Image 1 (cartoon, rainbow, N blue to C red):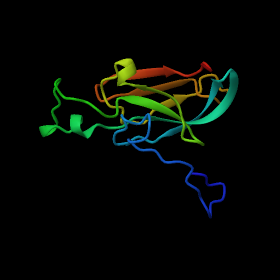
Image 2 (cartoon, helix red, strand yellow):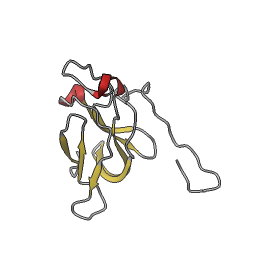
Image 3 (cartoon, rainbow, N blue to C red):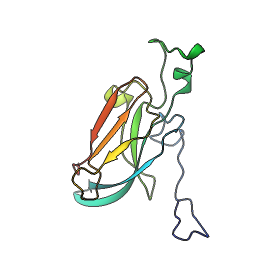
Image 4 (cartoon, rainbow, N blue to C red):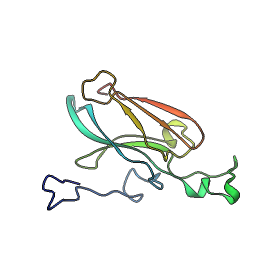
Length: 142
């Protein structure tokens, strides 16, 4: 949302699971994180305000009878992380199960760290419902 004029806020964009690149989007429980990223696009480096979030919770896989999940559970949602241009909603980068072997949903909030104090995100930590902790290094412009 653009709240430059608080009396007249504007919705900048809206995404859901039917949008291109959002097929894995599950129930979005986490608070999206806004961070400045230094990105190289078409050979040009630029600082971009970005929205980072896990792809959500997969109720079909995680809410089985009596809360017990099995290895035969078919997981289809939430298995990844997405980074969007905060102003346009365009996908900057994402990782999903198809690309990384991420087999479990990522419903929790991410931890974004500016390690060197330059105003740009450097590291992102997040966990999945399989009990795994992931680290993403975003300090490179690539």
